[in-house]
Amino acid sequence: MEQFNRDGYLIVRSLFDQEEMDLLIHKSKADAGMQEDAYGRLDKGGRTIKLALWNDPKDDLYGMFSRCRRIVDNMETLLDGEVYHYHSKMILKEPQTGGAWEWHQDYGYWYNNGCLLPDMASCMIAVDKATQENGCLQVIKGSHLMGRIEHGVVAGQTGADQERVEAALERMELVYCEMDPGDAVFFHGNTLHRSEANTSDKPR
Image (cartoon, rainbow, N blue to C red; front, top):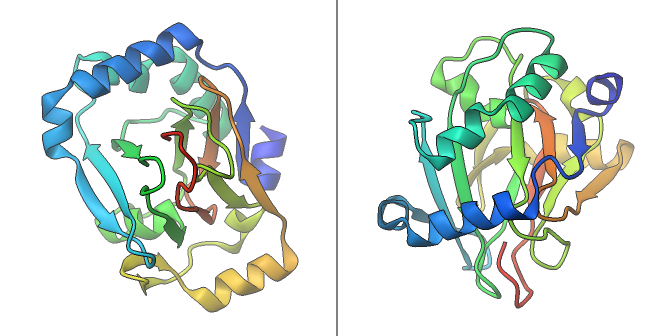
């Protein structure tokens, strides 16, 4: 908890095992509804990120992950209180063509959706191995302490004010969250984060 409060993120190794990740991979690939609901976002290089997002955790495999004690208990510890599910999403970065996300804060979106307080966080699970080559999550360590930053259109996406981002990068550490399948990273709603395009031959 001390590290999360200081750095704005916390990586938990082996939160899930390979068998559980295999179940999730199989489910997502066989899920026609997921494939139909996924939509694309272009990055500035013309690559596409596929994204599926939903608010209701439901009683399926995805909902079981969202509501499982390993995520909920960790989140309640980090946020020091009871939590609720806001939304879930799956991001698909295909080999060579999967696009990049610009610098942003999740609360930069959520604030405009009516969430008044930033006592929110995300949990990202590595279903596949996440490396710098296939576009792993990047965070600016300690950037959550800057508070909410204004967001606007950046390279066709909703992104954080670039002057603030550049100032943060001059003073704070850039961290690449490389993870193995089953690892998870918890990060504060105000933590600046992004990911590069997938230039590898491996999916993410």
